[in-house]
Image (cartoon, rainbow, N blue to C red; front, side):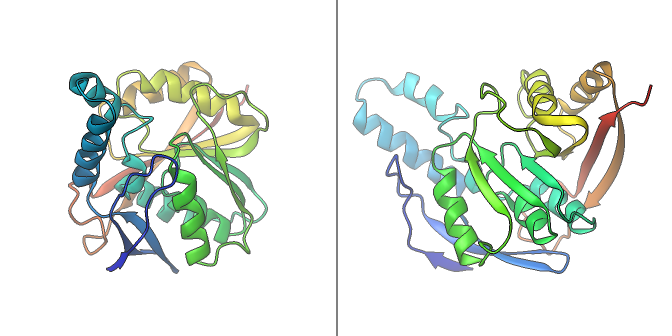
Length: 247
């Protein structure tokens, strides 16, 4: 691992970053990631307390809200599982959108496979990390772009043949919200791909998609124990592909 002297933009929070080497099939990337997520959250809390003295409890609620907590800076097992899945498929000229992309590893792999990819997220610090990682890995020559996009609220401006997401089902309200967003951004006749490590909300999400007329196929991607994610318990990732049932 290589230490990287870089600070986030916008909030000015000094997350300590490191370069992690990530291998996905034949592809090898060096990604700037937050060195330690717990430390980053603690630092965020301390910074906000200094700015808003006397509002400790309310600030902690804000920190762990999705729009502030720096979850995006962690490489998650489901993202690696989705990237592995994409690395095995022909994607030339396929137009794809990744919602809640975070570090956007699946988008980077898909772009190198020839897809036309848009990675998106609503955390205000993601764009800086995305731009750095694309430059560092010389990905500018691929058809890979970034949208700052809140999948819960943003108006649909373009629809895609494939809409994908990983590890976006970790709260009770997410199955309905995620299903709504994925289907809104997907072209009629397109595909939706979701990767999940088997969290408690996954089955409810699948049921909602079935109620909306989608059929699905499941593939299990195994995470190598030698990977950068060896500290996680998740070793098998469910990659589920949805498409409209033929009538």
